[in-house]
Image (cartoon, rainbow, N blue to C red):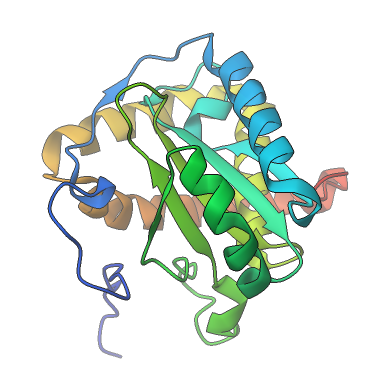
Length: 213
């Protein structure tokens, strides 16, 4: 059987220079202030976005105690309908300094490509890189979708498995030093996240974990 190679993420539209996917990734040691900062950011976003934002969660490495990370918050907003949310969120997010980016779907984990409907991995994505505000990647995903679940499962498994944090942090330090931009960083990191996802799903089945339990 021919070897399968992962396909790099490609935006729906060409990227202009200076966009987040072209930044040089810089991983820094864990900052204890990230937890409170993430909570405050989520509360502000929830208030701005209103009832269409069913959940607003601090996700990604800055949400994991002790984890080294890029000093950029990742936030997930769970919604009932992506198109309706896109229209409703455009104005309030622009007021907060967010710019919508042309990425409309997430990476499908290796081994699941033939079993998953690509539409189930749809998303909307905004970022903020204003000099006077903390940098944020904002991922809007449909509530109950596999990509919404994976973001929360990945975070919660790492929180529950602190012995895995140093190894994953070390991997990110080395990767950030070896690649030219965050787009490449994400593409190389995806297979490692896929592996963690397999173990995390076993943990979820064993512990009865579920999103927003």
